[in-house]
Image (cartoon, rainbow, N blue to C red; front, side, top):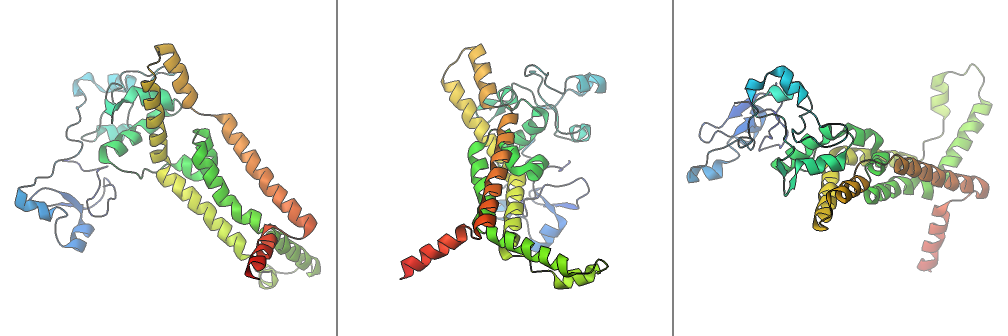
Length: 315
């Protein structure tokens, strides 16, 4: 049996093709060898007395028909560009599909209470990448599923996928420190510019590093907050997208719309929005630029007024 893409019951990490896997001799539960050695026993040891026997969570999935041949499989492994194909969507690569337990996901199969084809219509762009992730998260009851696009583009990606609420929250999260302490950044660059004016043209990098003003703490904190937001989107972006898609699709199903209206509304609520992420980036940039310009012209920032308010309340 192949265990790739199934979770280890100890560390919850997905088994890889080259992982060293050991199987409990009593119930058959697979573990990373290191996890087995760390715990010293099976993760399901408490169930052994009940006659527990481990079964792969993918064991009940219907198998693909191997008799159709490689050429035919390739031709049936994607949705069409204009509508959801009932033949479903593939996992992310041909190699994964060749593994035991992996096969095309049929559009009529269920993800929770909904059909795969409903998610396909809702996701629209790159559904062949998102549906296998959503299918697997639902099947294994997982919340973490890595998304490189969500990691690198984070807030713009949230607006692109119409998750405006989370996008606004994260935008405030990463912008609050630069806005509140904008004068720290202004003072740092002013000090750095003054230093550059006093150094000789042939000054070494070591001399510059030794004399350079210290980076303000607020700027360092802002960078860490930005990375935290990126990591959050990378790990949980697919999960929140699945939750939004599920909620929107169920809402439309309850309205009992005709086929044309349903198709229009599901694209309206789902699909992607280039305008949203462009507007979001412009608004964030303009807000930060405004805070910076106010700080340059007045010599103060919001932290100055916060300190005054705190001092007033302490009297």
